[in-house]
Length: 421
Length: 167
Image (cartoon, rainbow over all chains, first blue to last red; front, side, top):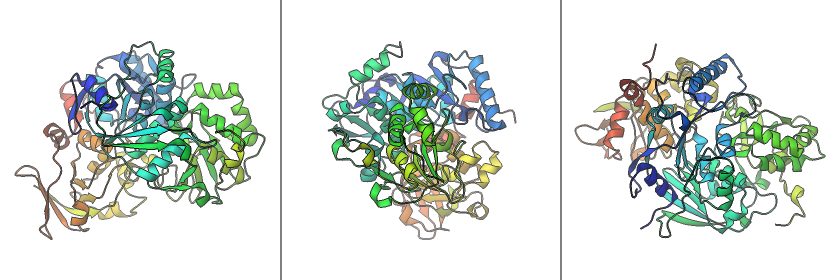
């Protein structure tokens, strides 16, 4: 019996011929990513030595630029750590600023066929690059940083066989909401994406889907490699790598065909991401105070492009705040060059610098008591974006942008009418 | 054997309920006050150190934030859930919080029941009121040792890889 992608990567990193579900694999970690959250005094422990500074990446992202003195102090500790151990891949305020998962994908720090850990849950996103990437806690982050190793409980794997092509106005976020609504949580399971439909998904779309896999409570979320991915990585990261395809006779807990062409725009109702998806029509008309597009899931150039397309030549409804936060400053610059930032600003959106920001209830878009928000970000948990009495609906950037124009939740279909599938 | 008064929680209890974003950079005392403040206001004043949590599926879903540390810090004796989210489980091991999966546990306990967990002379969970006995899922010995021994930090300190806590 062959192995699937997650098993092959874990076995390789563990230096063993094969691993089986249920086993604990002790693996060599290819890349360790730390964020500003790790450096707050309540969490951080002074590191005395590191296994290999070349395998470490430090990205300030949750509260950047600093929103209060505590964040500023955490950032100072991170700078000190990067200096002390000569961390070359250090992303501070400025040109290379961004959300860690976005930076990791932008720069192809997530290397196909390797293991990456980051002390942040949405690390799964590296799976778009065929990397076994997983969020870990701070103690094991420091274990990985200091020893170069980590452990994983090998999970069963669900394989999604992608077929067909998304219809105009339907996005990767809707694919995720479809999976989360139909199949619910994937606790202790890996998710593998492959199949002919993958060729119709941009790398940005795959990034969104892999990031959102975290919300399925999946262990690893990994896409098959293809030429598009391999060329992308080669152009950005000089490290040699071996992408991993599943064996022909790989074992899966289940194979699920997924017809991309059958998916429609969906909205997750407040307080839960899984088992919470409804068609847009079911909540259309729900009044909103804020609309947000951003985060590691929906701050890609594709997301900004679709938002700009929807709002072009129109105005955000009076009384509604549309906040757009690109995933990285590199994406921000691309959006500037493409004219998206001008289009969004002219329509009344506020385009912020790259940070986790409103998604984590951090800054630049925190919700007040009783407010209603529709968000294209990672989570709609109660209290996630600010006051616990705020209501958070979650949808695609197109649906969020259309809702911002309408002043209430609205289907974006009219903005894509006439486009060919 | 460890025993404690049970508080019942449902399915999909997420990390943000245990450690909301707005207290992430605050003191441990402020973080403790915020545990379950959104879904069970006032609970933190009713619970006592040594109490235990009995929950449904996918306990601890959500972020990597150290929600397990929060439960450890407020004195929760242990957690038994139908299933535990993978990342929450990792944090439980690595921060030294005793958390086990135990099929059937949600139906076997009512709030206020006393739960007895035996991990040394056998491997069982018992409801003292009903006498019902369940078998928690086994976990590898080395993970259990970390969970019960304060987690990873003491290990890294002993090996000179991180500095001991100054305060």
